[in-house]
Image 1 (cartoon, rainbow over the protein chains, first blue to last red):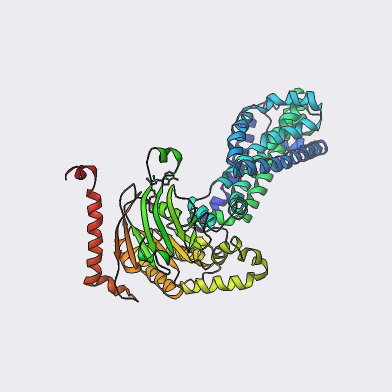
Image 2 (cartoon, chains in turn red, green):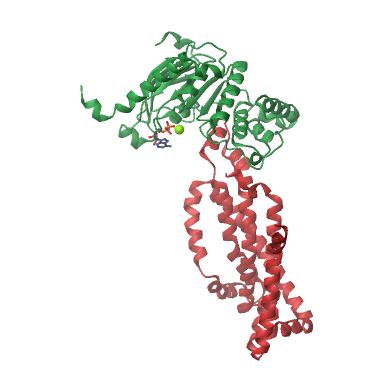
Length: 256
Length: 277
Ligand SMILES: Nc1ncnc2c1ncn2[C@@H]1O[C@H](COP(=O)(O)OP(=O)(O)O)[C@@H](O)[C@H]1O
Ligand SMILES: [Mg+2]
């Protein structure tokens, strides 16, 4: 029982190690040239060699992402609150937002470049545009799900809309909100890198783009690893926050 | 109207309700021609088949819905909007999972006046009151637990406390014990009986369980299938205080059987039978 729990906990780490080993062995055994598919060892060497530029690029990507993500939280929460608390707003705004969300963000980047030029502007905006939608939808969903009985209990006491929103809607929306943050943050990284690759002059996206065009695959892969590590770390951070703030939502039997 | 109409606490006079204008135009009413007078402190029960309009009646009695026709007066006043003198509990306890039991019970005091304005200042006092009430229904020791740490019966007790914390004059229970097992249900009958005996608020209890209605109520009303009408009014003359043992007496089962008969008769009053003179 205990042993199997231990195993379950470490299983992802073990799997990752096994995959990396398999990768290394495969690349070595079949003598795959590093400009096609570099081995983990080569990637690690690149990391060591280009520590400075890689860290600088990672930092640039990180803060651009965080600014875009911050904007996404602010706008997502506001819009979500609006459409979750008013049926008219829901009817008016939601279909528009769905349509907007369906636009491929890669197609927007060139337009953003025209408006804001090469640099961090398109990065921040792409990160924002790609990540605010799940936040908005989740806040709205959390607010809008109220059992009719509870509504009666409160309404008969003279509760105003605002009371119901603050006492019931918002706390209920919190788990949805935190749940959406961990999805949104990974999307925001995607957005930043996307913009950096087409219109950036800094950041991991730009580094990958440059390394790729120079056939320096090991460096490009090192960039990929860096971005994955950042996105994963942020995902873990937000799922930790989620678990530690809204524990009530994760206890088995409470149902509603 | 009836002799008691002047002093009645709840007074329905020929009340009809259609849920919207289309239904009204089509003459499809959820409840029809409801005439009813309830004395102050009286405990009434409403029984009837699903969908006959029991919950609709509750909405009318609390002012959550206005009638399409007819007059409703409660506590001497015409009903114009939600009535704060009422407390409600339903089959689903619908406690808020992020609040402890005592905080759940306090919720109404955060909303209804005059408690609302005093809430911050008098929180201690109110909390004391909530704890006393919880102890009274047998939840001592569970006040600071979360709803998901409580059994279904315990959650329902807390839900009834929430309905009573602002000392309403009228308690409305819509199938409150429907989801509980037979033993827990009978336990809660006694708790409700004791609370009512002590505080003498008016109770309107909607239930499917005839034994429950006869054990608890002063008067049982039987509703017909939709459109809902009150078709039988049965005064329960059993002496009080009533103990659970009474439910095994001949007198008790006779009343239950009589009501059962009425409901059976309603069932048969489908169009087929109505056609025969
Ligand atoms: N909000 C509503 N809008 C329209 N019709 C409703 C609504 N609520 C209930 N009804 C209808 O009114 C009738 C009575 O419903 P209800 O009072 O909930 O019955 P009960 O509580 O006795 O099961 C049913 O035919 C139901 O379909
Ligand atoms: Mg009902």
